[in-house]
Amino acid sequence: MVPLSKSGGREPRGFESHPLRHICDHGEVLEWSNRHAWRACVASCYRGFESHPLRHICDYGGMTEINGIRIKVGLALGSGAARGIAHIGVIKALREAQIPIDFIAGTSMGSLVGACYAADPDIALLENIALSYNLRKLTQLLDPKMSIFNAGLLGGRKVEHFLKTIIGDIDISQCVIPFSAIATDLKTGTEVVINSGSLITAVRASISIPGVFVPVQYNDLYLVDGGTINPIPANVVRTMGSNFIIAVNVLNAPVKRKRLGLTGNKKSDHMPGFFNTLIQSIYIMEYSIVKANLLKADILIEPDVSAVEPYEFYRGVEAIEAGYTAARKVLPEIEKLLNNFESV
Image (cartoon, rainbow, N blue to C red; front, side, top):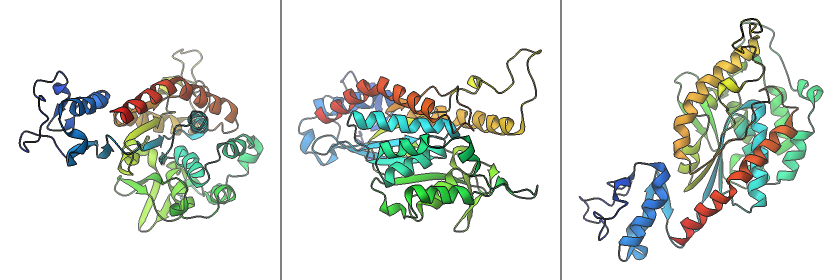
C-alpha cells in the first residue's frame, strides 16, 4: 500500500476538511463502494496531483493510474458446475458492449470457461461448443472408478481429452488473455493459483470436485476444486494487474435448489440422493465464502440459474441466456464507472 498519510506528510491540501475524508484512513479504503469517490476526492483537492509520483493510488493491492493509462479490466468467474455455463452469456454481453477483458481468473467451471476464452477469444465458438453437448455426449466423458478405495468416483482422463479437443495442449503463457486457475491444496487447505504450465492441467485441477474427481497431482501437491477455498477469485484477478474487477457469481442461495427433495413439507420431503447431498454440502460451504469475496469486486453479476441443477450441462441454452440477461442489466453501471475512472 502506498499511503497518503500524516506520517508521510503527503496529504492533499484541504484533505482533512474534505467531506469525503471519512472513507479513507492512511490511504486504505474502508468501504469498497466508495473507492471511486476516494479517487475523485484526492484528485480534486490535491494541487499537482496528476504529475505527482504518488498519483498511483493502491486499491486492495492493485495499482490504478488515474490519468494516462486505460483501466485494466479483470474478470473473475466463479464456480458452479453446470450453472457456470452462464459465464458464456456474461462474456457475450460484455463483448457486444465492447467492454475490454484484460485478465481472467476462474474457479472450477469458471476456470474451464475462462481458459477456453483466454486461449481463443471467440465467444460464438465457445457458445456453439457448449450447446452441442446433449446428455448422451456428456455421459461419454465419464470414466468411473469402481473401487471404494479410490480418491474420487471419476478419473478425469476423458475430461482432459475433451479439453484438448477444444483448446489444444497449450501452455498458459500462450493464452491470448492472461489467465489464472484456482485450485486447493488437499494437504494444507491453502489456495493454489496456477498461472503457468499446462492449461489443461490447471483446469483439470480447478474442476476436481472432492469425492467426484480424483485429485490432480501438480508438482508435489494434490489439488482439488478451487471452490472449496475461493469460489470467486476477485482477489486473484486483481493481483494479476486489474484495477477494475467484474465478478460473476452463479452460486445462488442454497435454498433456491429446485429439486433437492427438501421442501419443508413433511409429506413431500424425501432423503436426497448421494450426488445431491454432496453438491449441496459443497454449495453451502462455498456460498458462505462467496459473500466475503464479493467485497473485492467493483461490479457483481449474478445470473439466476437456480432452475439449472449442477449436473444439467445439457441445459446450456437456459444458462447462457441467464448470464447474458444478468450482464445486460449491469452494463450501464459498468460503463458509468469506467467513464468515471477515465475522466478523473
